[in-house]
Structures are given as C-alpha cells and as structure tokens.
Length: 263
Image (cartoon, rainbow, N blue to C red; front, side):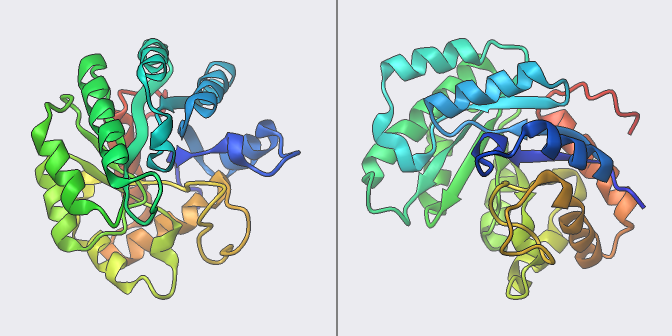
C-alpha cells in the first residue's frame, strides 16, 4: 500500500554529485510523495532551495543559516533572507538553532544567529525550522525570550527525551521524526514518538543523511520515507494509512501549503 507523505525536511541540493533532482523526485512520487520541503542551511543553499521550489511544483523551500555556520551571520545575509522569505514558495525560516556538539562556532555566536532568526521569523510571519543538539535548555530559553510567529515551527529530526518533547509542545512547536526512529538502538525515541499527540507530529528524511532501516548506511532519499512512517505507526499502534494522512495534514497546516492532495 502506497502511503502519501510530505518530506518535511530534505536537502536535494546536497545529494551526491551527478544525482539529478528529477530522478530523485520521480522515485519519491512513485513512493507516495505529495510534496517536499527543501531546507536552506546557508546563503548559497537557501538560494538553491528557492530555485528548486520555483522549478518543481511539488517542492517548497526554507531559508536560513545552520548553527554550524553561525559565524557567517550578518546584516547583509539577514537582508537577503528577508527578501527571499517574500518568495511565494518559501514556507519557513531555517534551519536555525543551536548545536553545542560543535566547539566552533562558539555558543554565544550561535545564540546571536538563532535569536536573529527568531526575530526574522516573527517579522515575516513564517514558522521556524529548528536544529537542536545538546542545547535544549538554551534553545527553550531563547524561544521564551523572543516573540514567536503565530505558527511557531518544528523541531526537525527530534531526538530529545519526553521532557524536552513536552517543553517543545508547550511552546506550540511540532516534532519531526527522521529515519533515526527506525534504528535498533532508538527505543527511547520510539517511546517519545508513541506519546506525542498525532496532530503535533511530522516526518522527514533529512536526505541525503540518516537513511532509515533497511537502507541505513546508504545515501538517503525521499522515496525511503515510508519506512519511517511505518515504524512510527507501529510504535503508536496506529493504522499506517491513517497516520500518514494525519502527518500530511499537520505538515501542510504548519507550512500553509496548498498541495492539492485531497487528504
């Protein structure tokens, strides 16, 4: 049975050289893809995401600076992101956030970039796509210190525990689960996924990274996403088709998409 899905977080422009997006997208459509959000991680890749979204009708884009490159943030980039955010196909600001697994850029530099992205999202009225690694307490603090957009956003590739999940949910965010939830050692994450309200969940590939079982170790691609969907349905003891429709609607609602899918 084909499960309809929106890949809520992908990087088609980071696929291995010589991988035509047309080929990847055709496989994904055959697997049930309704739409895909191509996520910007810096200035150039945000531009590329917008170009992909204006080229392919089932791709949407985000613009933002990954915390690993936070030292590149500045007024010129902010002005360009503000302009790109006005593009019809841009549906969110990010990915942004904090990643304290990096020793460089320093935490304070990451925090300044993240705070600026929160303000930008509030200004343009678009949700945030948040990358958070080893930094939940500080991420939550900064989110509480700044006005948020009316649709706050999503914690992408969520890997926190239930306490972190509750805090994110209390702030109005959705949680997106990647192929990590299919990994053998991810029992704790599957437990979290089983407890999150169905209307507050999304699903993603984060391709070309984090391919789900049974493709783990390979280059990830959107056509593999149904494997993650099935694991989510299994750990929640839900019908996969019903959960697929719910997550599709959640993603479409957060990003204010008009995908044309009847679900």
